[in-house]
Image 1 (cartoon, one colour):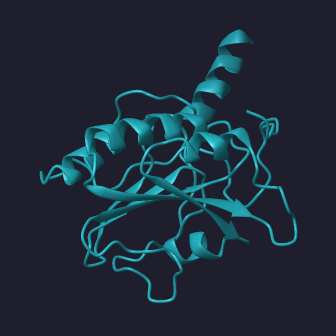
Image 2 (cartoon, rainbow, N blue to C red; image 1 turned 180 degrees about the vertical axis):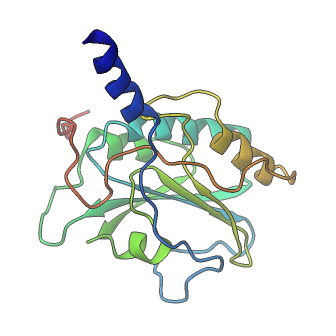
Length: 187
C-alpha cells in the first residue's frame, strides 16, 4: 500500500499540465505589452496554486541572472465580479520580484489568447513578437531548482541557443479550482 501511495504522489508531481495552442507570433488583440527593445517574458498564474510558489522562485533566479535583458509580466487569473479573489500571498511574492509587473487577467482572456491553461505557464517572445520558449520553469510540481525550462530561458536571454524551446508546466488548472488549500491574502 505504501508503494502504491508513493507511486500516486510521484506521478502527480511529474505529470505536466495541459496547454492550448500558443501563437508563434504575438497575438494582435492582446492587452499584454510586448517590449520593443527587450525580450518579453509572460507568466500566467492561478493566485491560489501552491505549486506556483516554486515557479516564482525560479523566475526570481532567472531575472537575477539576466538583469535588464527581459521585460517580465505575471498575469493572475481573476474571475470577473469577484473583488479580492486574486489577492493572495502568491500575488505579493510575484510583486516582490524586482523587474516584474503584476496584472489581473479577467476571466482568463489573455491566457486564452496565448494558450495558457496551467498555472506557471511561461512564454518568452522577442521584440519582433516571435515565440522563443513556452512551458514551465520548474522540474516538477512545486519544486524549485535547476531545470530545463530555467536553463533554456537563461540561455536565450544570454544570446545563446536553448536546449529546449518547450518544457512541461506543473501547476493547477489556471481557470479552475485549485485542489490545494487556498492561500491567505496576508503576508
